[in-house]
Image 1 (cartoon, rainbow, N blue to C red):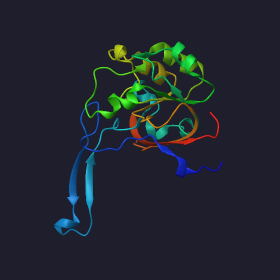
Image 2 (cartoon, one colour):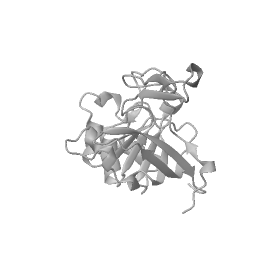
Image 3 (cartoon, one colour):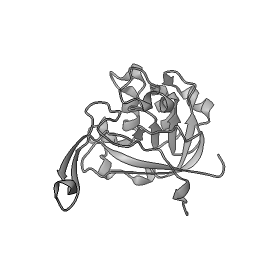
Image 4 (cartoon, one colour):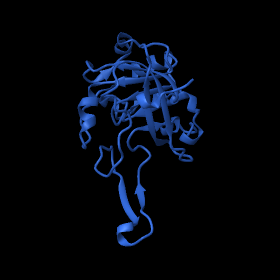
Length: 217
């Protein structure tokens, strides 16, 4: 298969100290600088595993689960479907997924109102659109291997005490792709490329992610 990356939609968000983040934002230290007389520019970044567009591996919630350096990359790369769920207010249910056209693709990205709203703020919101547990169960039933969403967490706000959606997906070995900017990726079928940084033993890692539009949806 030949891929024309010139048509790719980069759905990754830039990483920088002022970015939207769940907790501690990235920190940058200048180690060497040409303006200071050094022969090259060298920087040191302090970045969390869940920074920017990133993969949650099963180890995020499952003891003994796979870490990012042990993932089967075929789960992240291949045919993907973007579902239009921009009408959903808080929780994406199984019924919402079916109504939006959930198919047989192993990679599903949930495009919500987050992409044009709270994702564009540098501050974590109190409310966002997330996936309800019965929605997670529906994705598992459909054979989805990677589920993505356009905010810091795939979890619907109502479940951020016990994290039922994460527990279900991670327990079923479904990879979670979070902070995916789908503003310019309308509903349809794409070829997805996503390569997480292989942080050894880590439960998560940033992952540059591209969508290449198909001729037909």
